[in-house]
Image 1 (cartoon, protein in one colour):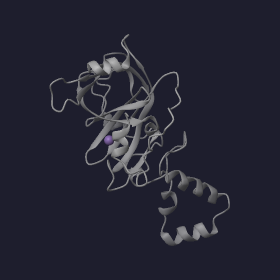
Image 2 (cartoon, rainbow, N blue to C red):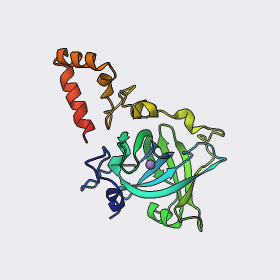
Image 3 (cartoon, protein in one colour):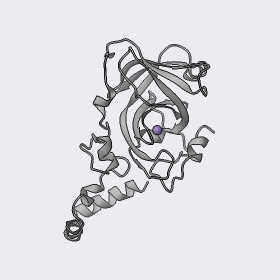
Image 4 (cartoon, protein in one colour):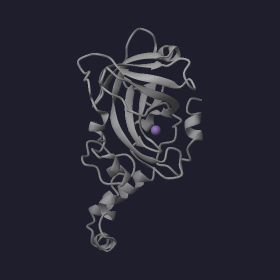
Length: 239
Ligand code: MN
């Protein structure tokens, strides 16, 4: 099965990342894509396209770009479950991929050309259009044949109205989910905005940010309204 490698690399009792679910994800009209900024051993961006019920995934050290004059290496990695596409949080030390994960971009994508996605993947040349919050327009991802371990692709922006020469991925380093920086995610700081429900251990440090004595006192005297909200957060973070 496609998600075996994903499951084999992780112990889900020790990481907030989602286990593969038995049920097929519900299909929307257009497939999902996302990019996660992952501060692991080396900072990289994980570029993921929903194809055939899983997220086909590439690790892109320099990140995706809207600059059509550069080609960025993208290492093909194991398929991820579609649920992974909304994950943001911290993979604890000692686990595979330990470090903070930012949901850097998300949206839908559409296939270009009249050849099915799996056939384009098999030929090593996939053409697609992204409808993200940051990434928009036409792209290609192309396998560098006869190179390295056979998992090295190039992510390329096509020239169109969204192309922008000199575009700098690091100038856009905030979460589309929570608005947070990588450091704020790593420190479990609260979301800057709450457009949607935050995933992972987002909001806990709202309390623990304070000196311990004050936090304890505040907890003891906190209103009934504050308590359920805290409960809800910690149950989400335990996922
Ligand atoms: Mn990664």
